[in-house]
Image (cartoon, rainbow, N blue to C red; front, side, top):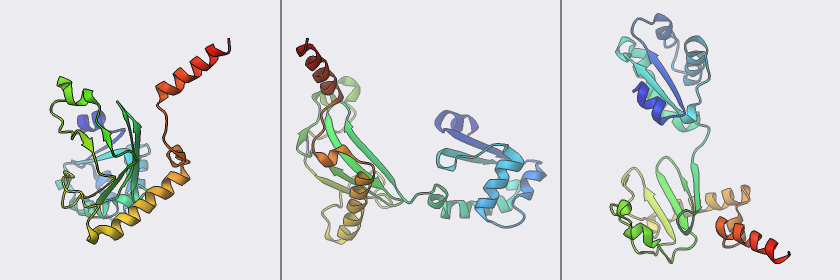
Length: 209
């Protein structure tokens, strides 16, 4: 697990309870996760744990039953620990122009496709290394909403379901507010690709010589 953490996470905090009375004593007082994390940092680890990007490993935790019990409180407060209730994401260009904006909460994922009637790049459909993908030839849905608890593989789009309208509208509004707060240029209209902007600048410069 320690090697996995180093390879896959920005920050890994490893704690082994086998024979470490100092570590066990941290869990003797209460289950205040903020106090526990602070003491894990200062008393045992000697550095800051970046919770949002960290993998925390409790090894030989059977040696400390209260540490096992504390995991319940880590789980219940995981979003609060990270300082956020949701995560926003976006894409404008990859292999082709495909502007999307979205938000993910603990349970739901909402996506808005700003250019829905777009054929996927032919390379994704023909290149051997992409053949295991199941891309439709045409992206036709402007909005996507998934219940990650009931549908973790995101196979059932709930965006048009009337019973999910309140959830969809709330998440849509959150995305709109986030775009405004971050001065998202997509609010002003379609965006040109970086390659086009570079070539346009070079050609304009040449035209002036």
